[in-house]
Image 1 (tube, rainbow, N blue to C red):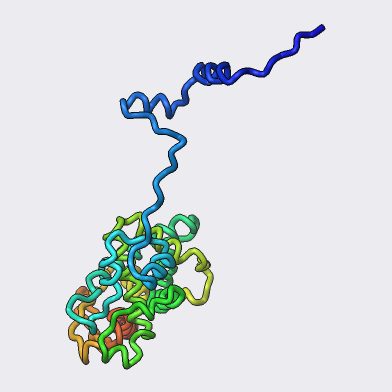
Image 2: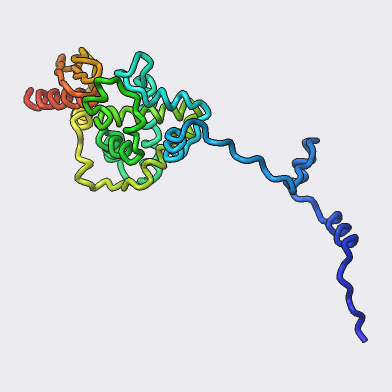
Length: 276
């Protein structure tokens, strides 16, 4: 008659577990001399969101928990609100945004040539595109505007919303580094199609001018703000576009620095095309 096998007792199970080989992770941890973690102890909870209800809701839409909440407030502060406004953060965010978008299109469009990648990037970072993203995030109620700008509808103005979004990207960069800021950009653009054949990717004036000059082995143009006209809440920018190798300069006006640069580039391109 076959002998009935008995189930191992708890003592036997314990001794069998003790004989089981340690995992690589356990060996590595033991080598450090630090105490072994107790698997029965739960990990500490994630830190709570800081700020009031509106700030928490915006951070959740952004997908970023600010360690320095003051950076978020600063990013949302327009120059009409006071001297401590968001334009320096906007400057920083613009550069971070361009780098993150360049990385995105380079990786997702491996067979697209450089010229088309530049146009796609320009399309993704232009004011109209950023304005749409800012509206999707519902940034308007969070903007800190001066009384005059608020009364004139500044909370809905495309340039103010686009600039605030760039400032937020700059704020995330200062709060947590480039990887966190780039991750924010990737989330914002997750549902934006990348199609190099889109008619909306037609060359803007600055891109067309740069390609015209490069095709003739001439240096790229330079841009500078000549003057800023009007009250702080309703400014007009006067920008000069210069091509020193041809001794030419043209001016353009716009409600934002970018718009003025585009106007100046268009004027320069038209003049170059007419110049023998």
